[in-house]
Amino acid sequence: MLSGLDHLVITVTDISRAVDFYTRVLGLDVRYRDQERVDLMLGDMALRLHWTTTDIQPRAATPTPGSLDLCLRSLLPLDEVLQHLEALSIEVELGPVSRQGANGAIESLYLRDPDGNLLEISRPRR
Image 1 (cartoon, rainbow, N blue to C red):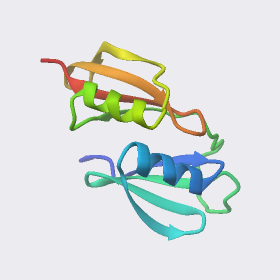
Image 2: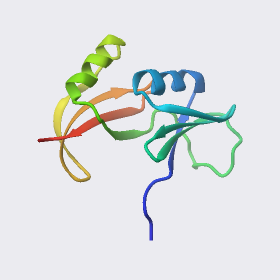
Image 3: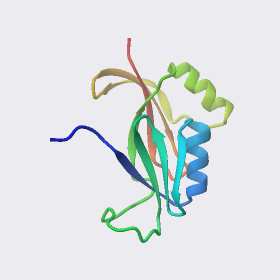
Image 4: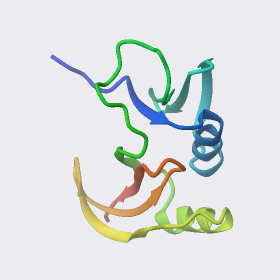
């Protein structure tokens, strides 16, 4: 019945700060929709940023910044990702560590976005 994910909404306290993080730190492309919604392109899907006080309806019952735990697949080896994060003074909370992904074993590292959302960056374990 379903074929995939079109977009995932991330509730943020400051859209400009979130756009800076996701574009500068994670390399996502940005598409501005309006002042309260921005799409960050991740392949053929979007991470859609919504401002905490938006009047957009319908929306989640309790949209809360910092409540997301998201695993992203990296095109780069994790040692290159770590070098990039270090160059930007972005703290890595954990990793690389072995984990289980949707399609098998992965290596992951963990960091947080400006709103405290947990971001796992992963690569298939070889």
